[in-house]
Image (cartoon, rainbow over the protein chains, first blue to last red):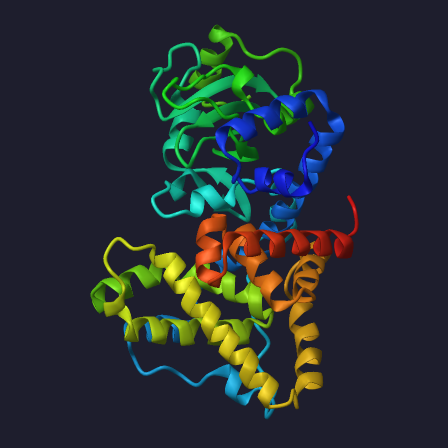
Length: 246
Length: 161
């Protein structure tokens, strides 16, 4: 089976039907070249999103808030452009390069989380980095893989120590169309290292918490970061008791 | 939708509208002008929007129309100020972030308008193909072929990884 670029980009855009997506993911596992072609599309998406993501963090100019309120709008910059130099924009890009770096694998982050109805609080940014928020942050801090409820909104997969010594955990989220990722504990928050669309499963079959359900992007990051073996139930529990600090 | 309700929703959506406008207009002041025009038009037409309709898509559509109007007005003015403006864009852009995202923004700016619009809606704003086609008032097939050409062009400009 050969796949057109259009099909592969539709995969990166989350636009394939379940059957085609499943077939493509199976094919991808045996075909590094195919996986690479898909990665190219995902990387472009990630590049575009990281280039424009900082706009969301900028303070909204007062004149726009005023026009929303219906107050008399201020003069438009556009009307005076050619007659006098504009004040240079004051950029408040928070730790810009950090964002660019941390978003590389987050190709699929933006769309599902930003659609109306999605729980946007799953992910926050702090100091320009993506960190877990809301229900995801709580699950990462509290939930043990060995004792979690099957229907919990967040499922914890593997917990492990990274080469840098931090505690990291893989997770899956049912919300936002199904996402999976990997987060590492850093300065009292969970920094998200990878986020990808969860491996698709037939509807109604329930949510598979096992690491086998993780998308390749997440298992790849896992393989890259892990030092030694994953934590067993006792070690996981002990790490939680220490607040995920060393 | 009542105007008051729309005002509340708009406050939440302003950051996304600003990002969308920035992808289209590049120059931050021009982008915010577009947002302001879109907000004013949206408030005028709030009654046309039924509750529960996809508000974000409606607003993207209004902003897109404002952008097209502005492009036409610029063309009529004969691009008298093009040189000054582009010089200024370079100066602004120098403060816009690291080299990689600048390269991405430049590459996007070099696409034909309709391709840039498709990229902004689908790849940056995360709309589905169906939603984006609706905003652009084209069939889905037209959207996907514009998107495919845009991707190819962007990858060519940005270089293979």
